[in-house]
Image (tube, rainbow over all chains, first blue to last red; front, side, top):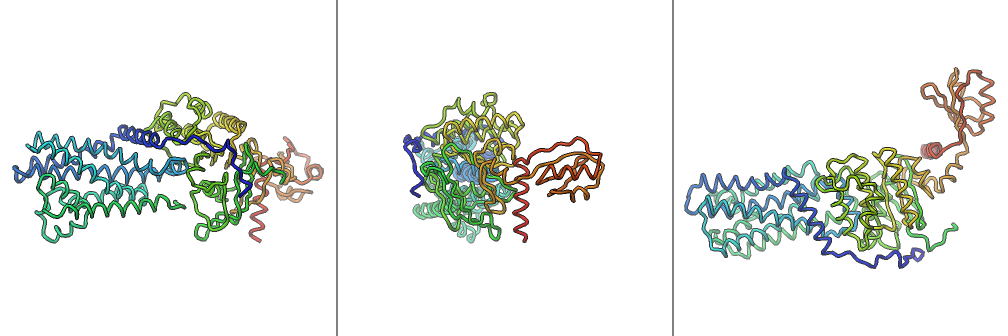
Length: 262
Length: 306
């Protein structure tokens, strides 16, 4: 190895700014999102349409239902972009071979993840703002300002485990199967976690089983903000979501740093 | 080897790579001794291990034994990636960014990137810099990938089949850019299917076949390995007769033309004229890289079969 000499000329003494990389990468991701209405329109409209149908128009108990379902459909609405932009986005880039170019480039792995999380957060904020507006205007939802803000905060932070799940799916699934796999997780999990209709409408067995699902705990945390949850300990919800986050981040890291990818 | 050791920037020692039962690289001992500002071409038929070799040096593949050092750094490390640029074979790139946005993003990965204007000039992108990559042709996309590979002022540039899908004009422009980069001290490792390209650009060629290095040297040295000449003509004669002529190694026919590989052209020609008086449109050329390539691969395959 001693014959491999680096001269001063070879060492780029100037290091790139990591913050600048994060900003540039996030900006690129955001531009790509803005220019892909085929992705953002359905992802925005789907939860809005559902909320309008089930939370406002066909609401069975008009006094509290629009408020309750606003929390759960908002959770549903932010899980979507987290799962899809990570899961499908990354699987497609891998299929194209574009991921290889990124991997061979000196882009730090953290930039890839942080940029997508930033974009997911921006997207989630838009979903939340639109749903809140629907709820306040058409559903007659009235909350304290602190509750609106706290609910938005819980929804944003709570989307992180789903980013991790999406990331792992994106790194393990093939590009042509990723959309189907993500939908197969997103829609049944949403329903079984009580995001579409209140969990206490379910048979007891299903209510118990819902404890295994991260989206259930996410919904319960959101409902806690407006005092409509089933009353379980907040730490249980946080612990389950943290566990999901840790497990799927580990799986994702394993896939990312694995060599010999096909 | 007569190469000053301080010029060695990459070394591959006893590296083997298998995919299941398939041996992609068989104990490659390529003390690459890649010189600064040298263009090294890796040639070989499909499945010879060219792309595998590049991916190993980029740290994208694991290997069982041996060692790989580039600039004394570990393949795949961020420190090494910042000294390198890589143009890999890609099916498509994200469609909804412009050429300019792609380049600015990749420039941000490096501490001292090449100036934007220079990147655009080298890659010949000035007319399409504000276009989305969605509408670009295959050749234009290749040029964007080239721009992304060079935008960090790399000391070592990997080009995996860089001119696939390019028209002749674009290909020659890229060759010019590659030579300019070389003149500034960039070392380049190139794989290609176009032997003309390797012949024109390379200082050194490594020929791979079935995971082994079968030949290494300058284009001239490799061509000299094959001391045959190519005789091409039309004639009213049976190809079976031609194969029996003096010094003929191989006789082939395409449409109206016969083509003979001969180790002694004058002996073959005398014999040919004895056999037939109908020879027309005769040309005799010395073997190019293509003949050398074909012949060396044929010899290798034969020896493997035995």
